[in-house]
Image (cartoon, rainbow, N blue to C red; front, side):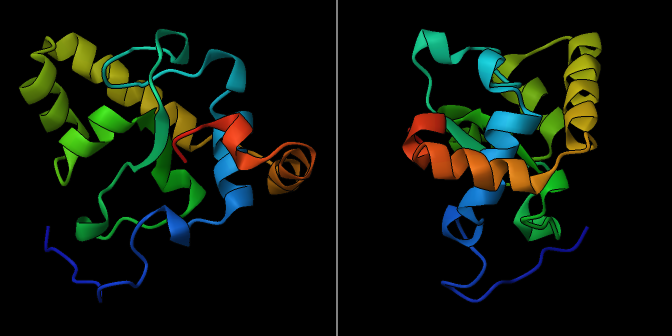
Length: 136
């Protein structure tokens, strides 16, 4: 797949993902009570900080839309860079193929969950963004 080039300062980074959308993904779709990184499988109770990761990297045409974003720990998000998810899981964790397939299936189930973005807006009104994740 061909890489897309984006102008510096345009469309890059979490500043371009609206806060209500980020909270909707973190708190509503990805279930605030069981937040974990789908790559390394560590939880927030273990001290990881979550960030939003593009399922399809921006350089391959991935968007900032809710169905292309998933919560992941900052460490995995940084290591993954432009790698496709299966490639990343195989290279960085040496997971067997059945585990790679299950993780990718989980991520695909998360990305297609239907959510009401107004819920994210209401949650953001009740508590600051830092409450939902200190990384985002």
